[in-house]
Structures are given as C-alpha cells and as structure tokens.
Image 1: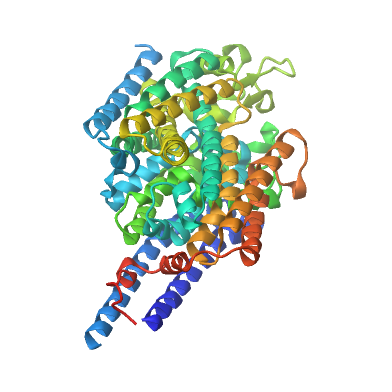
Image 2: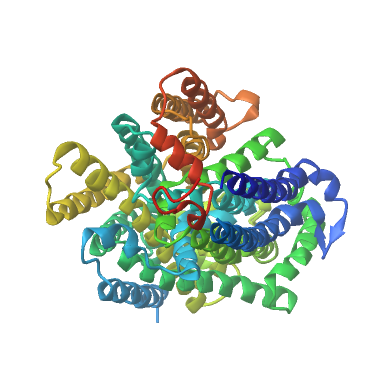
Length: 89
Length: 548
C-alpha cells in the first residue's frame, strides 16, 4: 500500500512540475523578454504583447484541461492497481 | 426612446430573470444556503465560478486599465487567469477532499485551533470587504451612467440594489442565477467588441483583428504626441512591479475565500479539477477579449474624437465629465481637441466604449446591464462570504452555539446589510480605480491565506502556532505596505501599493514554516489526514483496519 501511494505521489509530482514549468514560461518568462519578443510579428501582433494578452491565457486554459485529464488517468490507473493488489492478497 | 429607458429596460429584464431563478431555487435550509447541497456538475459550477469571478474589476475596470497602461495593463490579464493554474494544482481538489463549508472552517479544523479560525475570519472579512469596495464603485458608476446623474447618487442607488439582491437568496439561488448572469455579461461584453471589429476592420473576429488596430495606432502615435508606444513594455511601471503584481494577482486568486468556497460545491476531487478547468475557459472568453476592447476604444478615441472642435464634441463627453471620469481642457486654446488635452478615467472605458464608437442605444444599454450583472454577482458572492464568516463562523462558534436556523439566517442577513452600507459610504470618495482596489484584495488574500492554505494542505507538520503567526505577519505586513505605498510615498524596489502582497506572502510562508519547526506539533491523526489529502478518495477511503 505504501509503495502504491509513493508511486502515485511521484507521478503526481511529475505532472505538477511539467504544468508549472509551462505556466511560468508563458507568463513570467515571456514577460522578462517581452521587449525582444516585440521585435517579432505574430498573427499581426508584436509577439511580446501577444503572449501577455492572449498566448498566456490560452495556454493556461489548455494546461488546466490537460491537468484534469492526466489526473483522471492517474487516479484510474492507481485505483485499478489497488483493486488488483487487494484481489491478490 | 431615451437611453435611460432602454438601459433600464435591459437591466430590469435581466434582473427579473436572476430573481426569478433565485426564487425558484430558494434556499430551504442552512446546509443548502452555504454550499448548494454539493450537487452541482463541473461545467455548471465552472460557469458559476466564472460569474462570481468576473466582477466589476474584470468587466468594467480591466479593459480601461489595459487601455491606459498599454502592455503594463496586461498584468491583470495574466494574473487573473494564471491564478487558476495554482488553484487547480495546489488547492481546489485538496480542500474539497478535506470537506469544510468555509475557508476559516478549513483553517480552524486543519490547524485544530479556534485562534487560527478567528484570524481567518478576520482576514476573510478584510479581503472580501476590500473587494466589495471595487464592486461598489463599479455599481455606482453604471447607475450614474444609466440615470444620467452624479456619481454620488449612483452609489445610493447601488447600495439599495445590492442589499435587495444579496438578502434575497442564498448560494443555491445564486448558483443558477449566476449561470444566467454569466451569459448576460459575456454576451454584453462580446457584442460591442465584435461590432467594433466589424466596423473598423470588416471581420467580426476581434481576437484576430485588433493586431491591425495596434499597428495603425502605432503609426498615429507620433503625430498625436504620444511618446510611450502602446505595446512597449514597462513604460508606466518597472519590470519588478509588473512581475510582482502579476504574481500577487495569481496567488491571490488561489487564496480568495469566495472563489475557493465554490469548490466545496462539487462532489469529488476530480470534479474540483474539472470545475477549475471549465471556469477558466469561461473566464478566458472575457479575458481574451478585454485587450481587444481596449484597443478598439483607443482606436476610436484617436480617430473619431481627437481632432474635433472642442465646442462640438459628442454628447457622451458631457455625461462622463459630469460623472467625474473624464476631463477635457483646451490647453493651447486652439478650439481643437488634442490627445494630451483629454484625461480618460480607466473605469469609464468599457461603459462608454459603445458611446465613443457610436454603437447605438441598444448596445450601450446591454453593456450597462452586463456591468450591473458583473458587480452584483460578485458582490453577492463576497457578501455571502462575509455573512457566513459572521453567522456560521463567528456567531455560532463563539457567541451563541445553540442558535437555531432562523437566528443564523437573520445574523447573516444583517451582516450583509451593514457591510453594504459601510462599503457604500466609503465609496462616495473611492480611494482608487476599481482594479486597484480589487488588486489590494488580492494582495491581502495572497499575504494572509495562500501560504497557510498551501502548507495546511501539503505539509502535515504545519502547526497551529505557525499558521497563527504566519497569518498575523502576512496580513499586517500587506496592510502596512498598502498604506505606506499609497499614502506614505514608500516604494521598495519600485513596487507599488497594488502588489503589496509580494512582501506579505513570502513572509507568511517563512514564519509559518519556521514556527512550525520549533513550536508544538499537530496530532498524529491530523498529520495522517493531511498526508492523505493529495491522494484521490478511492486510494484512501479504505475499510477500517483493512490494509497493511
């Protein structure tokens, strides 16, 4: 049981780190280099402005749906393992 | 038909809809009153969160601040959406699993302390009240616009309306009424942006066309004497303040009591994550459109207003001058309006947008109805948080443990009425623009709640003394910095009053952590249930003694 929970925590941690990395890059990362990004045009927008106004927000929305889906999968997977372990014992 | 009649008609029609829905689903017992009987699906809950969330700050104030701040105003866009990532990852599922009615209840039970709970109640009231101030100003302005009166009279109308609305139903009423409100306000926001996009660029897709507006404005700026390009970062503030503000708005989002309470209304952790995702999608529809709204209004001002003879300006200029948000002075006495001769208040941009772009009475009235929906729905949610702090947390726990249901409801309703009155009186001379006052509320939430909530949900060894010390330090440092930066002229690292939480929040984390290391210990049982919080219900709801 302990092993099972530790495995879950590890997987969960990995998902969180991946999501938070993207979250930080599209907001703080892009803001830090925004004067440079603004030299580039994207869909008719200066890219730095675009990231803060649209790119970051759209990414956040996608991240949350990925989070909900990945966590559902993780939960199902570990619930299955738990039930399997129980049947064995 | 006059504008007042059209606007009022739209406000009344939408209002009748909310009240009809609220009455149909009226709260029957106290359990339902607070969390709607925990039977709400994820998309519906997401929509209610969105309506609760999109207040006068998002609807009425934000695009204006984006317009006046250029790139720098986008801190609000990123901050108020990015916070949901923190909320969904760190708090919503865990707090749902812990399963308490309110944030002070979570803090009190998790830290096994009446003192911690009392402090959390105090912080809830401070945060929510600051937030209500922003709603009050937003309501006052829109009432002044609709009735074509002075701002102060607008405030009095707003007070009456908010009290009437908030005391009518509990959260059950508010959940379904808020779904309706969400649609009213998102439609009211999208129609003017879409029409402006069509009018100026021939395509009804504002998210794509406002890039051209930015281009054309950049070309006009030098001729109009604008030397801070609109899309250039850090012209009205510095990079440290910008990043600090963005972070504080995000963290505050995740610590806001009236938002978190929404995640108790779903049945499982899984549903809490999906609710957060849906909420952000619905919220995103407005946040993605706000910079477009800002760009089009600025474009309209540059093309249709600047360069006109001062004595032949459109009617709306007189109205907004009377409300006190617009000032026009012919500084060089040439009889022509120059860009620099016009000072536009941030809080008029959304409401006056359709007037400025000449969009007609129906759209003007629709935006006003949306602004009323935004301010009232959030004021409703906030006043519920304050009301339950008084009736559920304070009154029953500390004053009269034997109070019956009627008595509790009565205390809650009195709390709503008195709070609204006080907020109204303060709002007669508002201490800031809407988004600024609301940003203080986020700073306060970031400084007081976020650290003890996150540590409480993720670190089994966080202790009562740690939480109490952390909240006291976080809250007082944040309040002190707001006052010092706003009225005392102190600015560390160039960080302004809005981002005050950037000092309170890390200090709160640090103090809670250090004190927890050295002072007392949570019960074994509590440590166990906190370690279990991150696991889904299926993995931890084991039959007693049935494992290991």
